[in-house]
Image 1 (cartoon, rainbow, N blue to C red):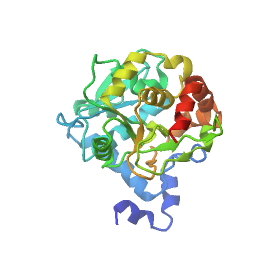
Image 2: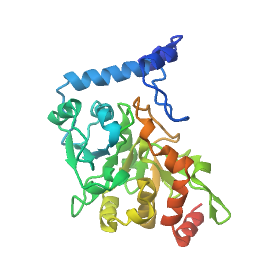
Image 3: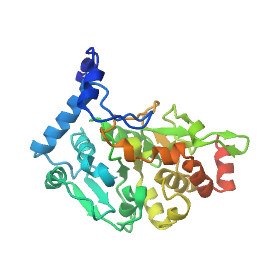
Length: 306
């Protein structure tokens, strides 16, 4: 039994974690530490950031990991980065893209920089697309896949290794830990909130991957995204997953989940108050962006693939 599961069984652990952690956030996305084990995990990552000299990258790994952050989340983004850096498989490059020049580089980020983290500032306005688009357009022809990561997640140690294993199984597919199955009622695409989690590792264009738990873009997809340019600004400015999925399935590239069960990893405390969940899901802006991105022929092709 792991330390996390053992500590979680201690009576009153959730209460104590709540006392030690930050305030809860969105219903269904509570980012208060749920157990003492969560608090211990945060302490370990903080200790690692202050005292570790271990490189955060490994040149022999055939994967790049990309992340962006914004607003108040920048104060805690080092936690997500440290969770990736302590993994059993380290990325070839670990890049943090910033589209806001006013964001301060914290001492925690400077410590990560000394161990190999790249912090690159790009023009303002790409929003959530910052996590992948600057990298997609950074090379005339890509040879190394890129994995997106979110600034509000504590990734498990086998996170990148799991993605790499799934990518070897499905080399021409987007690979992710969390996907939903696109569903229809007749010819109508049902609202995103009514889709069910994907429950298979089989690749399919109907699997809609989300970047929250990590998503691998094959090199061919990176080239396609570069060629499409910034057209996402017109149809899906607030949801990168919609644009990426559309570009992929339009070019015969399906989506495969790493495991049969979807995974949503532990949230970094104090990060959800500024998330896009309310706007995109509760506010139905996801559905508006789907309607703007997918043509009737796109939806017909998706229905035919069922």
